[in-house]
Amino acid sequence: MVTVIGAGLAGSEAAWQLAQRGVKVKLLEMKPHKSSAAHKNAKFAELVCSNSLRSDDDKHNAVGLLHQEMRLCKSLIMQAAEATKVPAGGALAVDREAFADFVTTKLTAHPNIEIVNQEVTQLPCESSELTIIATGPLTSEPLIKSILQQIDNQTLSFYDAIAPVVYKDSIDFNIAWYQSRYDKGDGKDYINCPLTKEQYYEFVNALLQADKVQFHDFENPQYFDGCLPIEVMAQRGLDTLVFGPMKPVGLTNPHTKEKPYAVVQLRQDNKEDTLRNMVGFQTKLKYGEQERIFRTIPGLEHAEFARLGGIHKNTFIKSPLLLDNFLRMKKYPQIMFAGQITGCEGYVESAAVGMLAGYFAACFALGSKPIMPPATTALGSMAAHLQDTTNVDAYQPMNINFGLFPELPMQLNSKGKYRKLKGLERKEAYCQRAINDIASWLGAFSADEQLS
Picture 1 (cartoon, rainbow, N blue to C red):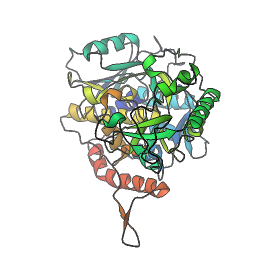
Picture 2 (picture 1 turned 45 degrees about the horizontal axis):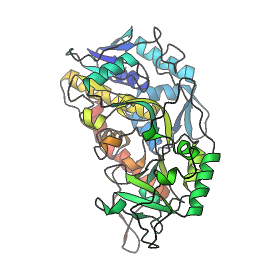
Picture 3 (picture 1 turned 90 degrees about the vertical axis):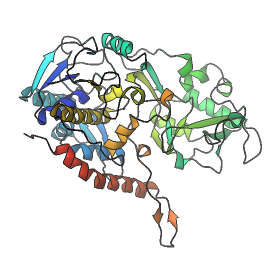
Picture 4 (picture 1 turned 60 degrees about the horizontal axis):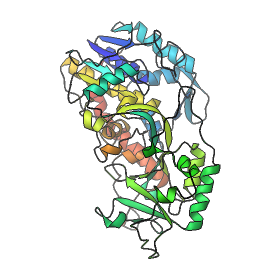
């Protein structure tokens, strides 16, 4: 018997993967007896904020690739999406009510799943039974307090401020340069984009006039001085940013030999150094406004964003510190975590990590050893993100994106010279490599399935 706590997308998928492999599951869900402020009905896998599971293009898009890998793994969430999808161009959008109905019906009818409607308020540290915590970013306060007690307060639980992440190879190094303030570090810790006085004030004015995303009814912003949205900082005075995250001290532009009036710094965000985080640029600006305004920064005119900024209620643990490769707590190996509470971002990613947790737990329950998906796949790159210790203190939730994948090898061109793939050609190569590399792992993933 494996206990799964939470019947959102991650918990539902984890329970399904276990049950399909012949493992008995107790699925605990606090609804309908208790709901978070965001939830509206008693069904499983409730989509709260959007009916879109984003792009379904598995040839050029990372989330579309993740869709396809999950389909190959016989994901319940992808089955529900296929059964309830509505027209949305190249996106995979669903009828939310029908989607939740599909998942609820499938899990309720499964002979290996027992549904128990009750709130769990304590982490089951004393139990020897394998348990998956899949309670999501709106985990109830009693359970959060219990988790905090057991993990030495290594949980981030507040209105999380997320800064945009840029693909490094889209930065213009004819303008930008590598340098840490006062030349500390190894010289490549930060990439710097300079602004003149005129450019700085134009940038601040654009921030002040931009459209912002409104908080949901269940959100009540509680900003911390250490993670204020950049537009909120700008509202405190036109010069606030130049004395804050955009201060130019300790830097000299090698292209002009001059000190910039202001600077935007980008810090390494992943082990492969394909992604760079815009330091101090957490924001509540609408996505279109972020792309428009941030591309006015010199050196970022052609920036491609792996993730745009945001601020929302989020509860997640520092998985690289607290979990092993198979999503088990290092301190209590019988307790696993899955879904957005681990530090993945988005409905699809949450379900994908739930699927992996279900597979790992089934292997443990059946006495076999799980095999990790290849790092070159979308599933493998998500798992690698949850173990990336590059910058644990700044660990943040992340959507699936090609910046998480190992870099592609250089390609030989017609002139006998090696070159990097770019644009759609690069994205297509990532997708093709992933589909090729996942084939052998699927054999292990499906070996003990008892599909019905």
